[in-house]
Length: 295
Image (tube, rainbow, N blue to C red; front, side, top):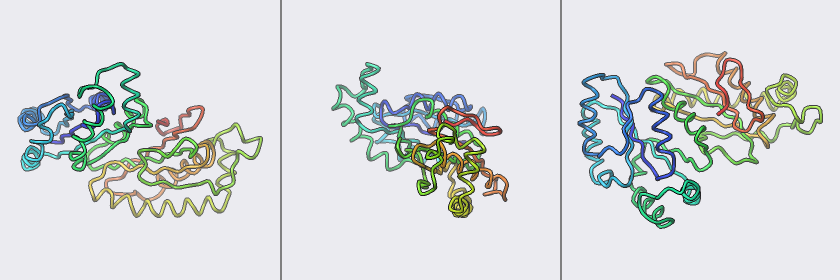
């Protein structure tokens, strides 16, 4: 049975993550006492051994730190697959979120409560399987990240190819980042300035550059090396971000071209990885035929 422990800083998006997991078919329970996790897993396994469960645990549950190592060992010994997802965000972002919602922090008065919680959670964070920094991630984007990461079947790696603009900052979730700002920019051509890299004329202009094809060759080669080894290590999610200045032209065109290459060529891994395309900063939002919308 697969058990996902969702924890992290209060205000970092645990409730949003659990709601997205529930939509994916996970049995979800929040604020479960850590010592009861083995009994919960046993009961769920009796009804459906293949069912996935997600449990939310936070710093208010002091048994998280005291009992989790032993509970984790017990669950793994019983044959369960246990993953820990830690949701985090910078202190100033957490403070702003609490100020905007006027919610009371579970650990007391702000901002001291955030610092106290971080001190309590830091040792546990080192044990986590995956971390998502939601500081620059909206609720909609977090739900999409959860769907991408945990919506695949067992053993299937989601390879997310994301275009973005450096002027809006690096994607917090990127595992690999490639800088495309050395390519000639269609924005410098008035006729293309207000068009996007999804349009044939813009894409053709970008992809006609020898350096663009050379870049695609090298990124494809790297991914054909990295992806099967990532699957071997048990990863289910890998984000590759390609960035230009504004995230409208060069990065969009190359991200789409890279996806086409990968999907047309031999499978990246066994079982075949699922390629997902996202355009973080593309305006207006565009749906690519046959591919999910950008998140």
